[in-house]
Image (cartoon, rainbow, N blue to C red; front, side, top):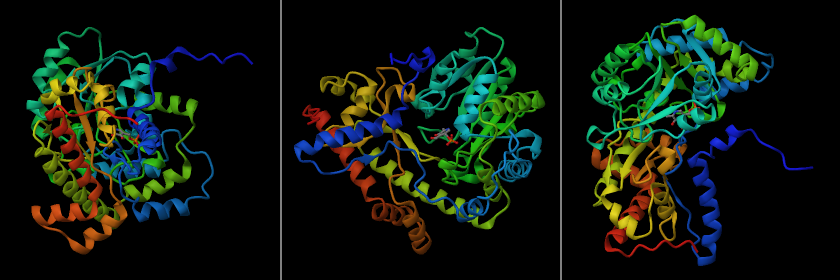
Length: 447
Ligand SMILES: Cc1ncc(COP(=O)(O)O)c(C=O)c1O
């Protein structure tokens, strides 16, 4: 058999960096054993919720296992109704089930919508790993739009407007993400209103990725772009982050007012052509995770508090490292560490581009896994790293939090140190990495 020939578009994309880092860690681990390092890696690269899925969701899935028939492509009605009610209760979005589409994770819905809605895609940078490779695969033009540290990497209305006047074409899509991966920043109502007025002026469609919305530490202040700019916003959410069920592969999208029926019909057509429906038992189970449920509300509250304690404590440790600038997270489970003040030292140590930073951090004896570079859509000379703070035993910490109820910065930091010691050691490893960089003694050892 001769070599199998591939379509060109598969050459346009690479293995997502977080998964690639996983492979690199495994490979480095093998090499490392030859120099006698039997220690594991500090896992700041992986953005998976550390918690167990809420019990009512798991029980509902067990009960629904027998539901083996096909289901509606846009999602079963009970679920769309429950999601609409959930979005109305939590975010003040319009509670009409006709506005809801169920899809194969937020990622999958992005892919479907990128496939059917025309226009270039504007992606504020640094960015989540997922958007650009999809656009590239689909042959869709995208524009990375650099944000600034002095604005905490939030896109401002002025920056957006200044960029939009340079763009041609009838329609454009803006990806917004709040809470933001990788910076942990949350857009305020005022900031969204300013962006919305520019979007209105230029007829921009917003893809608002709100998958971390319910992890916002100050949840009462959370604002969905769907309430500010309802005519042009698609609101994406799902079970993966706030309910720790990424593997269930269930995402939701609240459609904008404009052309809602047409979009829904287009999505249904594509879904029916590609995969028919999201797994029926998972949809049935998800109804339990969207209807009013005290146990799940309690789960949101506890997990959100733990994310806050871990995120703020780790942030404080990183903020003390001279030479680093870090964002202070307000939601999600990431913050962003800017190494650019150390650019010369990095170059001197042989780290010549932003992809090289994650490799350097992984080297022996540092063993620090992060995501940097292309995966965040950063230019080659921009040394930034995403720090995920989810490397601990979520179930154990959940139980401990209920028992110990830490209150106040000191007690919370002690709690984090007790239950997430690897993250503390990881912060110390970053501190040592930076210290040797500053002293000019950093050597990149792989074996
Ligand atoms: C910002 C952001 N959007 C979307 C996703 C993917 O969500 P889902 O599991 O629903 O596809 C992730 C997961 O890492 C994410 O961080």
